[in-house]
Length: 112
Length: 110
Image 1 (cartoon, rainbow over the protein chains, first blue to last red):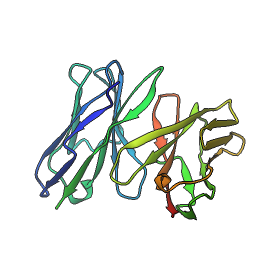
Image 2: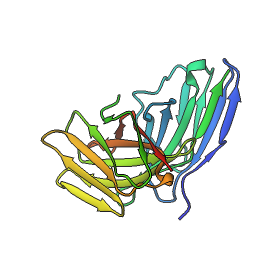
Image 3: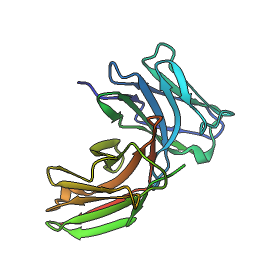
Image 4: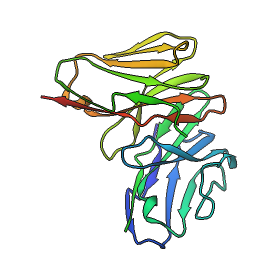
């Protein structure tokens, strides 16, 4: 079984620029999560999708972050404009009722 | 928000020794999970213990759960250099959301 795929692995941008991350979950996993993990901290949930609907986006800074999962499969997370404090690893995970959670390798974002 | 709190924040032991990490949480849970994260990598699921279980084993890993104290422990026996990583506990609430602690950084010295 293929894992959760994320791209890019690394991204360096200047503040006020925009950036997008992509996630392809495990086939058949209905639930998809985006997490932000700042160095030295545990992951923080940004948004949770169930198929193509949003279950929870209460911690998503909606003035600059957006996410979509149009066909209930792949998802993109966008930041526009980026701030220095957005430097973090962005993790995508997917889960199903029976299989539990699987995480991707993450995208390490550095905002300079 | 963070629910789980791991302690210690950092642990350094000799190879072959046992490593014990603890996790405390605040609210009722469906299950508690432990994950490992190697530097610069994603999170790897280690073990899940349900709220009605008290102890679970997987290879060199032993997890206990005390719901009355809202705490869990992860024991790694006969540690190896490859066990060097950060270890996180995460609690799973009724909305299938994981709430994470800040992690324990484990260093195994050869």
